[in-house]
Image (cartoon, rainbow, N blue to C red):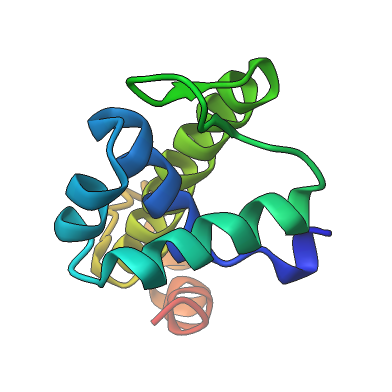
Amino acid sequence: MLANLEVKWLYDVIALEESRSFTLAAKARNISQSSFSRRIQSLEASLGFSIFDRSANPLQLTNRGKIFVGYARNMLDDMDFQISRIKGLNNTTQKIRIDAAPSLSVLLLPEIIAGYT
């Protein structure tokens, strides 16, 4: 089930939940309304349940849809956080202060420090 889940579908379902309109959500996602509808249908088929009650006006989330939208928001927030964290790994520098006896600082420290640079 999750192997077929596409990240863009998560953004789509959140856009639809916020706008409660297929037309407005499709416009916000910069795709045609028919393509947007197919993507929501593909997501629902992949999950095995309806996210939206299309008979309601305005569009409403089903009970499962309410839970899923919460998870979708959490997944996207976590993904953004983890990507930012990974990108930041190369930009971090740390300072270490080492106090050592003069004999150690001349003989051993250069070899130890070389392993970290």
